[in-house]
Image 1 (cartoon, protein in one colour):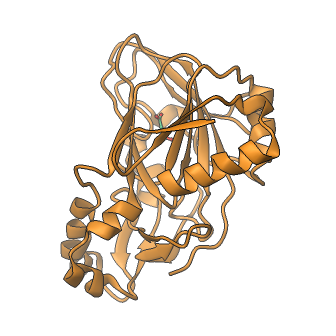
Image 2: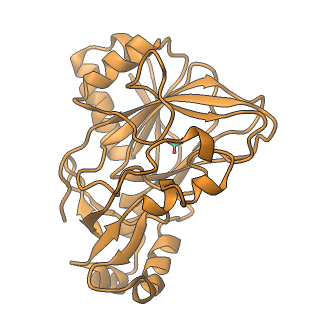
Length: 275
Ligand code: SIN
């Protein structure tokens, strides 16, 4: 197995392994690479829906998505889909999935099924590198802080997606979400400190209103994206990406109007997170 960095501080391309048939030692190396680099990309994979599900089960549990349409034959697989006549895509702004759950999903395995002729890249940003780059006074200011996260303003029937042409295809309008997490967590496997707030789902610091929280939150959101902590993936048929939600933010670039894009996503169950 060969690992090639995608960017100075985020992402790794892994070659020389077939995800569908990898052995336990290779599986452990893949997990370690994702925990460290935040996202791993695999090219030219033969990965049927059955193999996608079987591979996901080797990580532990699968979280069935509450919001996205599900593959009719394989409900473990959520469809991240945009039709040629839709303007809005899914995940088209920086976010990390499931921070609104008390035990956030570990990550996702995303498989390209239908790609536009050009565009439709995905970007990730590494929150360990983001934390490391914070000035010392900002690190001190956020030490011990906790923040409240929810997805209600995004997925509820009066939420952001309902105002768009993705509204009709999404589900889960009555799901209530809300969780409190430390602003700086330690990665459950590597112990590395990670900045754990995100623009989509982090609303306020515990003990402060939204208005009181916004100046510091905005400073952290801006500091989370540095020149070197981002990587960008150009998808090709056969590409699979696996990422760690604790370690990264991601952003699906919506620059392919008039074309279809369909990805199969399985979300991997996570574990408790702590400072
Ligand atoms: C997402 O999971 O947020 C979407 C990622 C993508 O479609 O590239």
